[in-house]
Image (cartoon, rainbow, N blue to C red):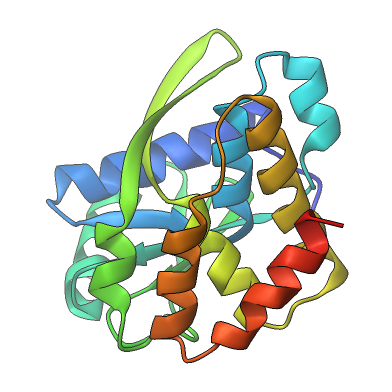
Length: 203
């Protein structure tokens, strides 16, 4: 979704925090995915807020995979809606303030319908340190994220995200685990896309 927010904006960061709290308070395993995950991962490697702000692509939403039934998620969101600025739109969409949240329950994650639990298991807890705040959340690992972007609609923004992840992590002294990326592409029956990754990052 096009939008005006990125992770350095107070409202967007607050939405990440509130969404994570809702899942944790209701014992729902989760992982932030998609463009929001790219932003969160990059925030772990770029110390300067100004540089981070320049690198992040603006958006209007947050995508999340949750390991619970639709009924359990709706119940958790309805409970949270009584406590704050949350609107349940139906069709797996809520708003926290002005930030759209798209959640996928098991079997709904596009391209990963049969791999939902593995996506959540291949995630990590991180602390986002921005705006004099520290926000704890769980985000997918970059290799799964890159596999998702390679095997999805693969627009220009996806290519930019892949290159940003690869080169910014590399400059920080950490490399994409290419065997892990191959593992995910094999799970998706898309092993040929590894060459696309190589052409984007090794030219």
